[in-house]
Image (cartoon, rainbow, N blue to C red; front, side):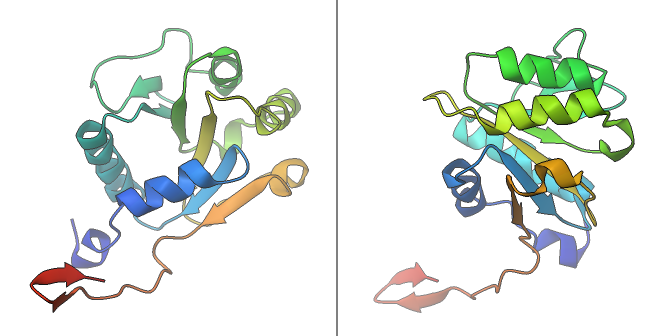
Length: 162
């Protein structure tokens, strides 16, 4: 991991931003996708948060429990249907999705964006220079953790504060 990538810090604060986002569709732009996914995995294991990763080669897999995959979720359409029909809270990270989106998938994403129940399902698109269809752009919240100003912690009254 490079020094620049190590500063990415997928932190509890970023997780809270994802959870508090008004919509269910989030785009997180980063040039260090692999490092960000490793940090999401670490955060999922430490916090116990239900986080899943979809990629075109493996489908949906759990970040907390390595090796646990959702059968029949390799196609993005099937993965989005799974998210839509799931009754459980979860954060679903999608990488490498741009070339796989079809009109049916966009319709499913629009339905997911309108879900407002207690068991939220958040879809987080992770990548560099993300391109999303215009139909879902208005319901998408963009996060860029690399552009956040990093405040160096300082010692005050025996405690580290930022």
